[in-house]
Length: 274
Ligand code: ATR
Image 1 (tube, rainbow, N blue to C red):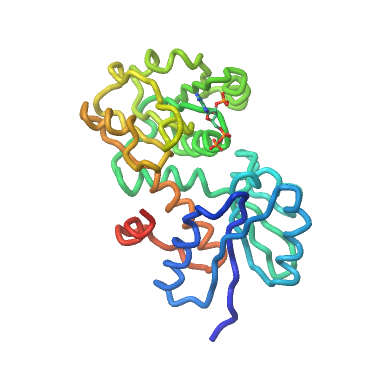
Image 2 (cartoon, rainbow, N blue to C red):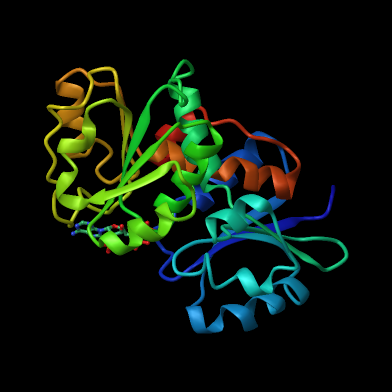
């Protein structure tokens, strides 16, 4: 039998992470000798703990989640262009020569979730409206621009954060948060990247009446799976896509990086994670 390939996800907190379920499912599916665990490491210990995990506990790679995606940057010897553009790393690999490679699979996760569920969706057709300007929004906007979105209308409660992101690409147009219902006409995609609508959070207050009926509506919140935004959009006839798929698809390139196989997202895996 080949050597055990140890991987995991590091976060703080981490106990609700669904990533171990996903990666262990794929390892079983592909008969691989591997393990994937959740490790709780506080931010102030990340840069001292990681070398110990690699050198003394023989891990091959990790996913990084909140609050580590930016903190891990100085530890990487090489960061690919995607992660550089997003400004955050969510996947690292320790190569045989000891160097650490960092990438970010969140943009892939967002785009391929749509590609799998709506293969004919045309990212290049019209503007996308993105709500929120945090870490998730950065990855999603990068993915949308790479996929050919002609324009991103970006609205964030704190306008300055949207303005900063808009400075990075002429196709990003920042608008005031209170314009979120008014700016929907002509969009072919609406994405909520804020935590609004999540269990225990405030609702997302938005009026969809100006949104074209063929526009795709996406929410990165997946608890509940059908947020009020998605229910309202579905009731008026819009196609919708839930947040769980982004989580599943972002795991695929990480698994490929560590285990050499690009795994698929199946209905059985989705059911397991839900
Ligand atoms: P993530 O990595 O999940 O994107 P984040 O970086 O903390 O998390 O970003 C959270 C996003 O949700 C931000 O865009 C935030 O808006 P601010 O920049 O104004 O903080 C948005 N958000 C959180 N709570 C919100 C609320 N009550 N109303 C509107 N936007 C909210």
